[in-house]
Image 1 (cartoon, rainbow, N blue to C red):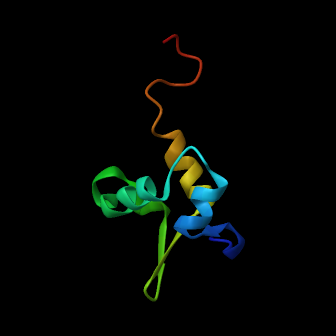
Image 2 (tube, rainbow, N blue to C red):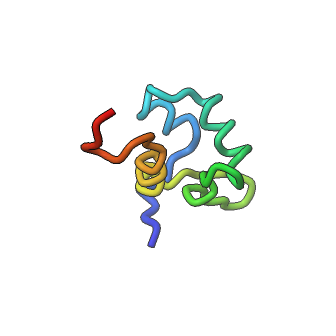
Length: 71
């Protein structure tokens, strides 16, 4: 279940996570079907929101190696 307090706009997420820009997030949204980012998106009317908890899970899935593996 999605908690409304976990929803963020692109601007809000970029402000909370300064390692990504609004442009990067918008690119992820545009290519969501191919990069799996669609799992974090919620569309209400014409607005797109990002589920912060789902975003964190998606971000964890982007690791190049499992945590604890020698690089």
